[in-house]
Length: 431
Image (cartoon, rainbow, N blue to C red; front, side):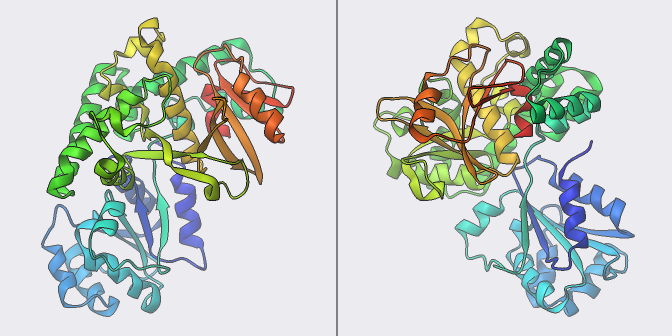
């Protein structure tokens, strides 16, 4: 299955300013698969080292972390000669070996001709929580997310539909209704399956939602195990409580996160470490409210007002134990959840595209789901789960801040009217 990260990895390989690369991301998003696939296609050989499956590897880094010392030993362990420019060196689950991470500084300074990629599922957690000597300024960094809507459609063999969607997005011209309906159907399938590569592969091969759900449940269990394994004892219970509650809060009319809903009398001081752990592990992301719409948006965020979205739609539906058909047919019983689910979907697509997302509220309660900086402009994005696109809040925002244009995401076809660019939900990846 094609992943867009391949383009980035090729650019990294060919860059004159290449440094050792850290690829981070939540468990099961496809880091190892993508690196090994890239290595097989772009190098003569790959020397792969996994610190989880081979804990004795840590000893190799205890004596010295200079490249001159490490390369002969790593060549011996890998059973092949590691050659500059021709071998891709891969350290996997590198969060389990602090010295391996520190060694990247010396590869950057003393042996820049070696090509090294390291991957870690809980790197953010590990670097934040322990005495890691992080090689600041000596590494390139990239986050891999679950597959987005475009990668899902590519896996489904819908290449020509993607091209049509991109043209319609650029020109604001509606798709033929048959294509629009087909794309909406694939979008709803994506909500159920999500973007975890193993789930997507199973769905493409079998079309079996029950099999996919089983895999999603396994991934959720591995997340819970991580909460126990890589967290201090006091925080384990709080982290699980917070994670379980996030999906509940997405079902509320106001999706702003409230600590008191985790447990009666819950406060920020009690749960903020748990929320931070979930964000650092890549399992969830925070979207803060902005007090003013000015550049840079980060300067105007309210640290106490935020929403939390999960990193994958399929896992969200699995966690809520929603039946596939309820989502595929958008039944009335899930009406309370539709708004939060679709907001979550849009946030995932925007995050994968590199946007920092925020939301806005007026004093009188008008709310814009997302504000992003796109091509130097601050653009409001209104999200509707169906095709009823009356947007009073957007009108208030546009009158107040006069943006270059606004984006309305809904089930409606492409169009442009009164400074509002109408984009169907399946095309959020184009933004």
